[in-house]
Picture (tube, rainbow, N blue to C red):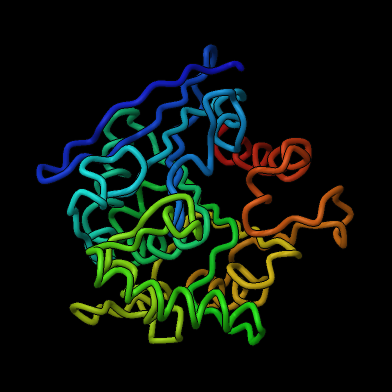
Length: 298
């Protein structure tokens, strides 16, 4: 492992956002902010033993910060302790604060890398705040979709039944969605945030659920930084390649798109999670992403 890990907190007054800092031991190339998706936390990008995309980039000189969204991971307080948050607060408060913090800390534009729903809220943030987008060097998304259009038995079970129906019911009962207890995710979710995601997943317009800000229109007007979307051939539901392409068309049509899997000549048939966690990724698309980022910042 060619980097050092430590944790610290960004104070948001009523709560603190946890950041896992992965700093290279030698050169410092550029700051990277990693944003996780729903029912997970920043650990999707790193491990104490040095595995994950965050660790890989840190080993190659990038200054990596893996955030836990409010109420998740090691952020304080945890959602199970009564913390509540909606999607708009994440878009308009937390993500701008994280980007601004790293921009001021390093006096350099920030690379934003997101998994799944993290890419949706990150795109909304940049579309809404062009001044924040101007501080972003590049945006990279893994398995990011907004609407799930797939029609399948898996869709009916995991989305229609569990996410859209059972999860909101459990949220009303417990005050939050206990995804860990029910073994449907790596972390829990605030009740209102979960309910907000349901509307977009079902196909509601890409506009704010609270003040009707039109994210779709703003996206088409934004001067986007370079954007790269990855999709996995074996991701049949949570980030289906067709839904990823639909999100690209809705936000940044000029974005680069790459499909991962054996059909593309790779050594593994990647899915929604393994695209970030499988050992083969280190010698395949992690390397491609590293080289692309190096071309942008050097």
